[in-house]
Length: 81
Image 1 (cartoon, helix red, strand yellow):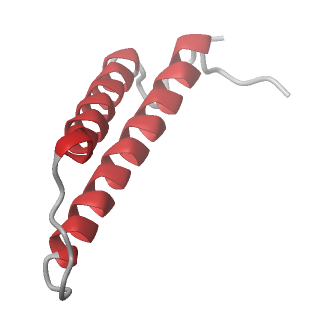
Image 2 (cartoon, one colour):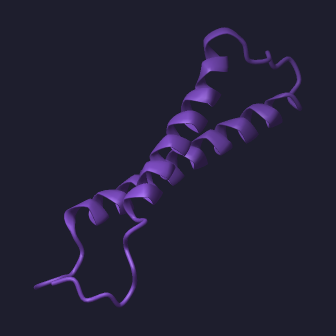
Image 3 (cartoon, one colour):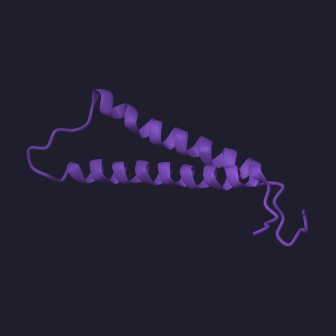
């Protein structure tokens, strides 16, 4: 089956998907820690756990923007065979 998407456009879509997934995991972890405060005798995060949030948000944002840059030339309906 023939399609009109180039290889870098597939890579761009994959990067957008991975970036959004990483941002979603970071948001989930943030909400999980925020609700942890409501439990009795729960210890707050500190130390190594503090590096998890910038890791997920930073990598997610970079992957998402790299995917947007790759897809910038993609125009719907353009015949590029």
